[in-house]
Length: 597
Image (cartoon, rainbow, N blue to C red):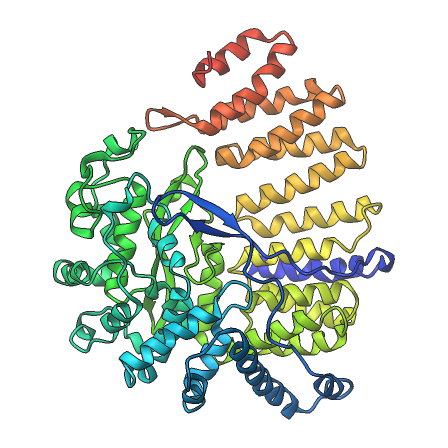
């Protein structure tokens, strides 16, 4: 509670800074859409980065008549009418580009919940409407009654299996050393649907499939194991389904595979199936694959996640999964090894094929599980608000406020609102109230609040260096429990000081922060690099030594018996500083510690 009060105390001052420089405001360009990973199907482990399928939303945001209706006082009915009309326009758009089978959309009209869910679930930039319609139509032909009964699952399968490379990507992600012919063929989308809707399996499941809404069911729909493997998992691990995280460590770690360039290990060229992974073991990616796939078999949405530890190197894979506590879903992880400081992990989103932060998935879960209906309404209004932001910012503000009133966990809504406050579309006093609300509601999601911070800061002229620096200092204290975000802030702040010609101050900030957070290992290397480079340019090398000694003494040098790659990188940056100053013994000692001879 004290942290929240501290946040609230500086927001009025911050909003005052925001209002100082209207000349610096620039028209927002559309946020760059991230690339997605196309895994090479017959060469597991190989992938390319691909651009989104489209960069323009195929659904018209608002008509001229609707825009006129939202100018001035807005009646309550206008929101419901806009939402309904947007769904209708989505159907019209997807009719044109999806090559629907005869009668498909007529059938869809007869099932209102399924229709709206399906039309709004398709991602406008990454999903393939042709494939999604084809899969949903296949499900309605094969399982006409169950597709209505389990419409959330049906929609999740449609938006995941619309492109099969998405399922291959989910299968290959985090796993190495397995040849294409070691994998079994993918099951079909109908097979996956039948597994989760089979009445005889339901008593063995950990969660009720009907209760899992489609954004969460996406992490069931990508289950790539065979039916035979799934049946084996139910028999073998029914007693562990309430403690599914324990399965991660049941896969014995294969040190031979970890040290083998070909990464075959004890499994060799045997089939890569769940029983074999359990019998012969593997490395962290195999442990994460086994745990996540077994969890899915029990109707537990789960995913592999990967990240870099403070020691650097090739990274580590762990499992994130959803579990129920006090009648609500929460996200947990297993195999994360918190002493390695994995503050975040990247998850392969089986719908979009984009890598996303596990913490963003947790925020999505908060919104979707607390009230699915409000979650979907908020997404629609945030989507429309983003589309009309450029030409009708006042209407964008009306819509984004509505989105956030429906669902406080609408990340895109908050990002749009911050831009609207920054651009003075929202009055300052009202902006203070909303910003305070964001800090309260999103206090468990600091990755969102820091993204909003950088948007705010953009509006303050870079010539107003002292004002910008004051806000950096205030913001730093918000992230006491997230040293990774504190480091990111200090890196931006230090570089900015150096850009302003305040080299001594910038170098001191960068290096003192690196010394303070030296135990974070890899995370501080960019601070050190920026500080060292600036010191060299400005003849401030001697100012580095008090900090370098602290950094070297506190930095994590080994994980087990292995020299940390991040430590080798650090020594490669700082040993030359000692040598150039004639401190050859100190440099030699550092190189010896890092085994850099």
